[in-house]
Amino acid sequence: MTHPEDQIRYALRLIEEGGSLISEELFKLASLADAIAQMANSGQIEDAKLITDYRQRIKAFYLSNGAFRAEVERFTGAKQYVKGIEDRLRDA
Image (cartoon, rainbow, N blue to C red; front, top):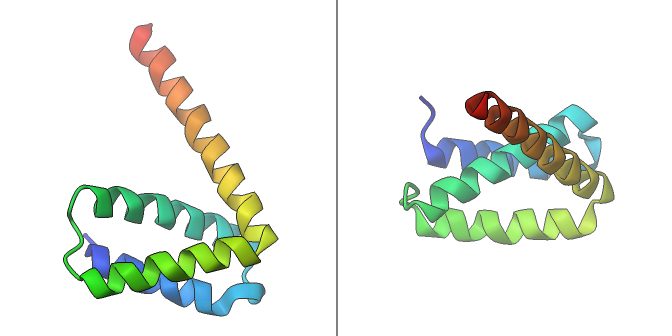
């Protein structure tokens, strides 16, 4: 299993590539951002400086990159869709 800090470093590498990312990579970054937020909220990330740097850079990237914002919305919608399916299957 990948360590949380490795996932953050991978996300930072994607952010550095910025404008050259294709939509699938931006979607992956949105997925990583969601996973990293969950890990940070649950205290799984020990490197405070790394998470602070990541949060500043992901926010700046989100604000400056419309394609990434669109992929964040697409990821959020997909996540809600899957949750709805899981809920229906559980209730069936």
